[in-house]
Length: 114
Length: 114
Image 1 (cartoon, rainbow over the protein chains, first blue to last red):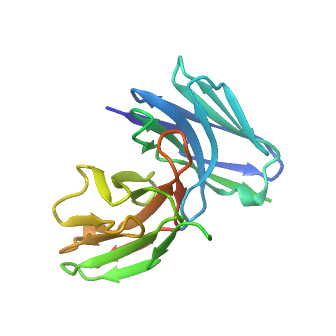
Image 2: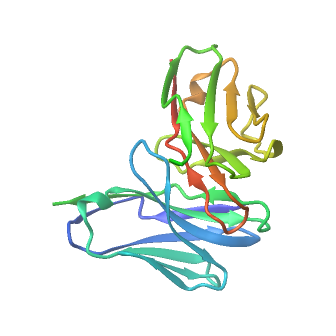
Image 3: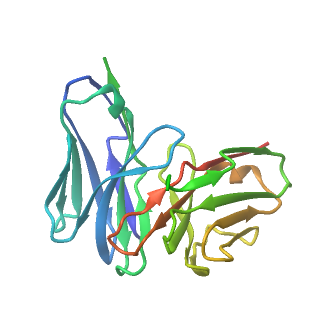
């Protein structure tokens, strides 16, 4: 069964600190892995997309890594800001590149406190 | 173009009633996806269209659910005889091409069945 699991389920950090979110997946065939940020009551917004051959990708203070051998990914947030408070969802695209069907993790809820 | 839009943003209905949601994708995006998201969980795939053709439906999409995209532009998702278990956020996304290309999400429609 295709699954995406994230840890921790929730996280509280102080403003300015760094944090790392984890994602493990069992999806086959693998197409690509994405990280989304979802504010409460809003739709997800893409942060990064990585294909099989990519190990790391950055988007400002967000850096995602991918280890396709161990089927693990991480999202590192540096110098956190209050606006980073949101749910971060790891998403894997399964099947051929023609499908585009996404399998979502349950998300990590991040709260950044002043 | 202001992105994917969904209407209504919120819907409260009584059990047994029918509801219909609308999604307007980004112009010229040929792929349109519907997802359902319950509280504390990641979105789950329901169905997707390429132009006006509905190419795949999840097992989550029971007989009470029907989706259409009659002219290959906007899409509607109808739920007949709503049940309390249908309460969720219904998200729509669109993409220009499949595979590794970006899916842009709308703000979602929050359905509450009382």
